[in-house]
Image (cartoon, rainbow, N blue to C red; front, side, top):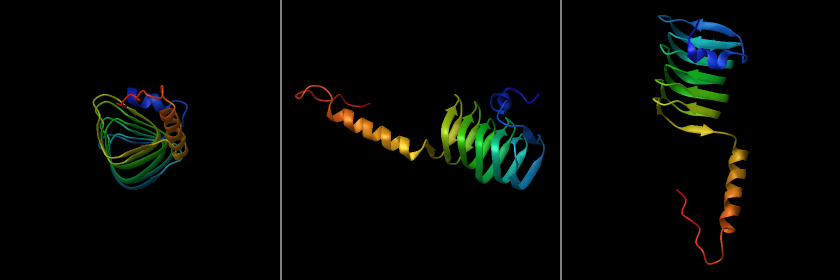
Amino acid sequence: MFGKEGDSMSGGEGNLNSIFGPGCKVKGTVDTKGTIRIDGEFEGTVNCPETLIIGKTGIVKAADIKVKNAVIGGKLIGNITATNKIELQTGSHVEGDIVTARLVIDEGVFFEGACKMGSTTSKTTAASTTDKSATSWGKKDEKEPAHV
């Protein structure tokens, strides 16, 4: 009913509670208890404990978006924080910073901004593991290969 892009995240992750259809223009703050889909134009703030879906025709200009998951097929201008996952679909346009645990970027996506992924504890653990392996690599008189 809503196309391929909505199906990948809406099934089992929350009920689709709100839809802003094509031609709908809304300004303000949206606080919803479930999943929201935007195929029209929205300007403001979004707080969604489940999934935000921006359809191929959707345009969102937001200072701040806080969600669990996001599927972006249209245009997003603003910063987005997702506690679980953000998916940028082919043809989507994102201008703003992304903070998420997991990020999926399809081919043909425009993204301009900064991206911060994972937790700080996993980065610290990875860095300390890398440092230990660098000191014990190879034989004494061999040089460690250059990292690419």
